[in-house]
Length: 504
Image (tube, rainbow, N blue to C red; front, top):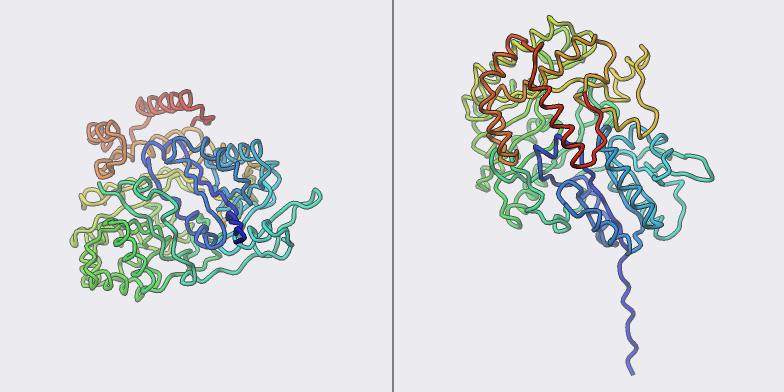
């Protein structure tokens, strides 16, 4: 008589991507949980991994509660600083009310404030920094009931005390396993960028520069790490083959740090004739300046249709203050140069930086209008500066009396692009930069290139464009009825979705 073999089910781990905020819901209806998929790549050999994306899954709560019946080893939740914390806390509460599984937080905010994060009763562990190896070792320890004190990069609670272990060293990205995209329905997670579904891909992490406003100075310690060009090309080939994808979005903070590597990727794409199109999220003015016409010709031939560049301000004084290490005289020529080779470009600006005067703001407006006038293939993006904790500017402002929130619930109200969070400028200037930031959304043709954006937003953008440009150019912000309508609209969203949002 044959003895029956007992089949052991794999132990389960749940990873959850919370919503970011109400604005993102309107603009991007889909997004790929790339960080969670990378974490999962180091888990799937041993565990059953369930990924829940609150952004794309309408029935995420039902799925979560059902998945908790599997008694997972732990539930991982990621969160950035700001509104996403609200959704991450709501998720953590549901886990605690429906299971005994520990909740593990990772991401930027847990790395910046591990002790503060662990002070919340719904959170049991934090993973600091890059989480792939740390999360795997923590999962193994929770599964086997072994010691956690020696796991680098972990924070935890013990007998009422909060303990933060030693930081973990940066990992070698080439040693990471292939990303298990099969854990999600890929087609349901592709946002439309430039009118086509785009696959998010990361080929490097960090940035070697020291912009004083950027979280990279703390999170990545001014370190840049990149995959070898051969690894990048192999991954792209796999995605094209397995998912019939033709558009990519490179999420790197700074793609061109190593020009040799970047051009090897570009030339490899041409040689393989993959016929893809792609957008590069992170590029510097100086990097594009140092590229020859032949480099840019290859860049376009390889499929690059757009690059995103940080300018931040039209005032050289402000650029020097934030240690941007670029010259304004290069911006417009580079914009024209990219147009020459048929590459769209986006220029990011900020308003409300410490020390910024109305004269500086006017210079920023003038620079923006010069870019738009000289290049119909250029887009601009404006944000309101709010200091990120643990950055050089954040630390400087703290010494001068600026107070960051001291618990997770208050961080929910720390809404980026909200001038009410800054106290170094007067009320009148706050209202002006709020209005300018809103108007800037409509001063170019960006909306019609993002088909994931609601149709009525695209229609309104086109009708409002000539009015927006006049308002923006001449700083006509005193009677801004559009901003009033915008606030009413946000209240309507709050009422319909039950969001607890602090209005500007």
